[in-house]
Image (tube, rainbow, N blue to C red; front, top):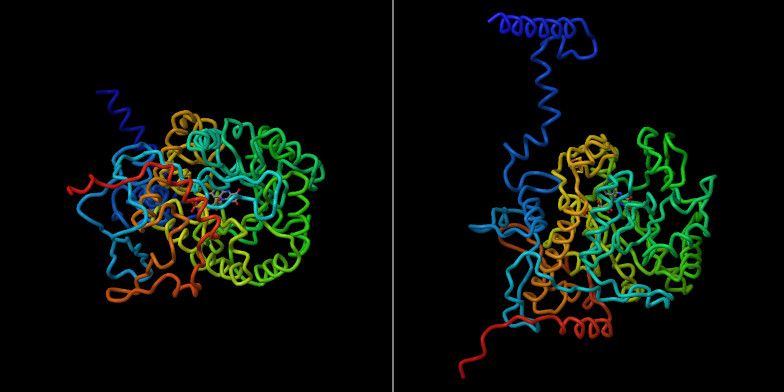
Length: 519
Ligand SMILES: Cc1cc2nc3c(=O)[nH]c(=O)nc-3n(C[C@H](O)[C@H](O)[C@H](O)COP(=O)(O)O)c2cc1C
Ligand code: SF4
């Protein structure tokens, strides 16, 4: 009894102390006006995303990924039933811009009747990366779905490891992101090494690009291609800042920077200053390493792309691949205005760039990679129809390894250990288990893409034509994808030789069909 009285007294005293502090502080008007209960507002603000997603939001309301989309990724990653019952709850009839994929009654290819999530379909790229420009280490990527660039630093070591192991299991590529190649990347997965403006992992002590270091990294790791990062959709034209507090000894060692000091990435490269010198640098890297070399960029003003394609068509120099990131893409941290409004969304930006390549007859000689919520089958199919040869997935892969879309990646307090350097939080993420989830997700997406391709009557997602997709204008009309983006016949497809080669490869895959005819 006496203990209860003490406890009650202590609680009242604590509340009184908070009330006094609230009434006397000047920083928060809300707390001065509503002492004690005003704290409820901050609590609710802090857990708002979680509250919305679990209690308030409908299946298709949340962004960046709706509950349905996340459920599909989670179920696919766990190899659980990823079907949905009772029909769509998307507002198809009234959503302008909604893409509709047109199946064929009698197509060339017949879908496999295999409903199992995680069913293993081999879906290699329809083009050989680097072949058009005769690179010494040209190769055919084994998977049309790959893991997009996310640095060690923005992601935890455990998350990077889970994705690297997952890439090995799924037979796909992991892009290192601009934060260099860390020990967490060395678990068997093949990689694309990304070179950002700070040249992390290939810089000297003054921060200058160091070709010898790049070659050493390439020679001692399973790196299959180099990607020069010009910009990314969520923060185009911006550099980056990793606060000194997050620059641990391991990150410092990985990136080649001093420990505990703010790490600022400039917004522009020092190795080239215009399109012409960019192409010289691309050719230098390709000649020195033998690897295919590409660029990653978001799309804004088209001057750069006009100049790039004109120079490629007239000078014989060129990139082996182009990764286009949509403005709807993700990042560890960015100013709101850049995430929300700078750079075109994927579909618009990609189509504009692809058109410039196609007008100069370069589209069959370059591998096109898309990013920007393309880890969802419907978006990915539109991307393939527009001419993408592969898609890169970032946040969907994060979801697969446990991200709950708490949207706190910029605070170092990620509750699932995916996007934090906090040891306690990272401890919760088991790379061995999550690597299997990442691989299951990639395999399921690949399988779904193949099934949709077959529903469209073709053997491979890269063979889906623009005529297979229409964009709804509303309840009563729809516009074919080629008309929406002003494509000419044949655009969006690989060359005839590449088409024949990929069809031959895909015919080795199990075919679908039904029982033989009764007579
Ligand atoms: C946590 C995080 C870190 C990222 N880091 C990089 C990076 O280092 N380099 C890069 O080019 N893009 C980076 N991105 C962008 C992704 O690679 C990708 O282009 C973008 O998120 C769109 O793909 P998504 O919609 O599948 O997430 C990052 C994205 C996230 C979410
Ligand atoms: S990575 Fe972590 S902080 Fe970022 S959205 Fe996912 S769960 Fe939230």
